[in-house]
Image (cartoon, rainbow, N blue to C red):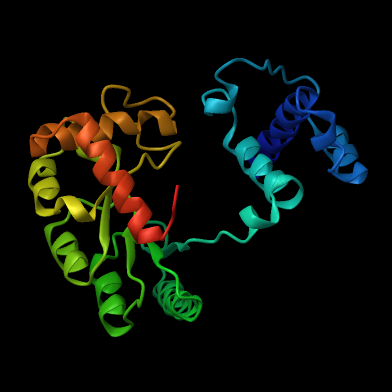
Length: 255
């Protein structure tokens, strides 16, 4: 608890420094009491310098990024941006952290309710599944998703990918397919047709080779794309175009 509190106070200091370089018209949109709260609760002894890498996420705490996202949503986003909800997620099941069966059952009930919400809103879903593959697939079969969706950071599991594709979902790969100890990455990539494949980073986690072990950033998605290009015999540009078009299609987005 104390560690979390310390990180938040450091995040407030980062926000305080970042807002110094923001246009005054943007800062003025934030209520004074919130600005005062940030200043009063920041860790003043924490040193934070703005660099060219700050807004690439490389030197920013996760908590800072989360606070900036909230500020953007509440005070800087246009009405059009606020209303542009393209999917429901991440939703799904995670049994890695939850061993209690009663709590797992609660996850399953919540997942079903979230699918119902997605169907009501006519939106696709983004699925997180960890050590819960069979239950995830069973729920999807019993509760069809009208607008389908994406298996985010898809586990390298043959049955999940095959069944997910049968159900009409897209498969999104992240850093793990580049890991040197990944024994079935090539097979998993080849299971997914080009019109159903997506790429991501799951930042700040799961940094791909050759930067594994560092704090992940969105810019590292190029290494995931290159792995897919190598396996499928495509150029990097081909993979970029394919995954971009797939993203637009599943999320019904226009650029």
